[in-house]
Amino acid sequence: MLCKDPEETEIVAKQANEIATLLLKLSETSLDGYSVDIECENIILYSKKFEKANIRRYATTIQCLDKCDGVVNKLWDFNGPQKFVDKIIIGNPVRVYNPNLILFEKFNTNGEHLRSKKRYSIGARIKVSDDITVVVFPSRSLNYLNDSDKEVNMKEMLKNAKSIETDIDAEEAFMKLGATISGFIIKKGNHDEVHLTYINAAYDDGHAIGCSNDKRDEDFISKIITWLVLHILSSKQQCTPSKSLSTL
Image (tube, rainbow, N blue to C red):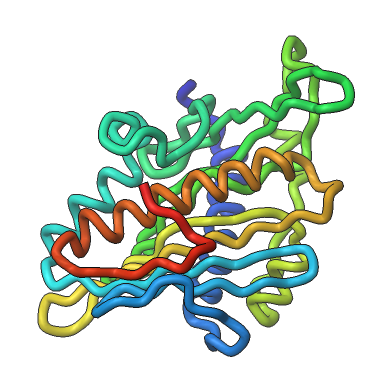
């Protein structure tokens, strides 16, 4: 499971940083075109729909840094979260490059052929600066389909993965990528405040790899994040969710 290949590690780190950069940019874009799904004293859940995509943006502010660190650690601990909110990080680790950079294996069931196909996603915890950390969830399916019983050339798969354009508009870059990405952006604020934003940018054109599973994962994770926000980060507040968004 532990990968000591420096070239492969560099490739995965580059892709993880591209995802983190795009998630950070999406969290900082204008809210024009977004609708509000949930709103209460310090929690807002936004969503924006495109022709082939949907971006959900969850934002809250925590007044206690220690509390934030605990939640973030549980989110990234791919063994721990299953014990307290079922699965936050969906997938089995198959490559560990370092404690904060992991390749996960996911399974997609092809409805036409009824065969399981392997697909892989990168998860990472990236410290962008002293004040900003991004937790990349393994939600982007790499463009590789293979019979489950065949050996996968990991390095070839990773080299062939589409790069993310980080020098253009964030929403344009997401649509050009044509894949689902998700993760948390944690920013330290003033007076012991921590700003926590969850981005789930789901792409589905009906042809992309793992679309049906990505949509299932999106719905499942959205419910869990809503549960985290409503019950862990702000358990004493009264929130009114929209009809389109359910809570656990």
